[in-house]
Length: 175
Image (cartoon, rainbow, N blue to C red; front, side):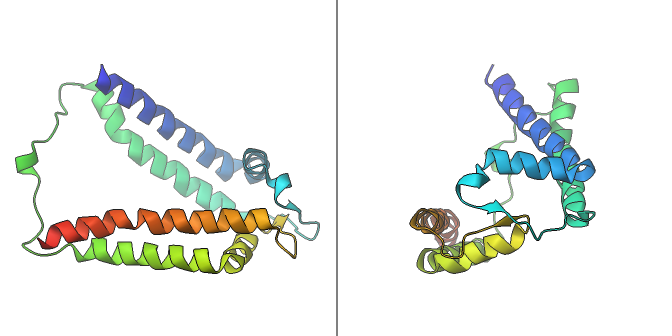
């Protein structure tokens, strides 16, 4: 029963990701309107009157990539639905361990997350300016309000706190 619950949740997630990617690929303006509605963008920004939408090539490319990723993620699910007995869980003893050394990749990812989170925590204005550059169709207020800065700091704290997971993996690998 647990397998079907996981498969259902995973399948719904893949389906939503694929639908959003296809909407971005074929109708990026609709995807932008949905994202503005979902993120309640009118509470923290206003539409940018100077933005000319053009052909939205970047959004179309990103949507195509997102849909492709969703289909790749869903392929094992489809195989499992067609042949539920064919895919069995892997025994812990068959998973290869690290090549007799530390997991330096986990340390690198953990340190990058920690430094990025601390930077956003200390400099929320830079993060909010970056958000403004990646959303040209929205305009952030010149003097960002306290709520936006607090939200940026909370995001930085979340990223810095999440960095403890790969750092823990690295510490476990050096023992």
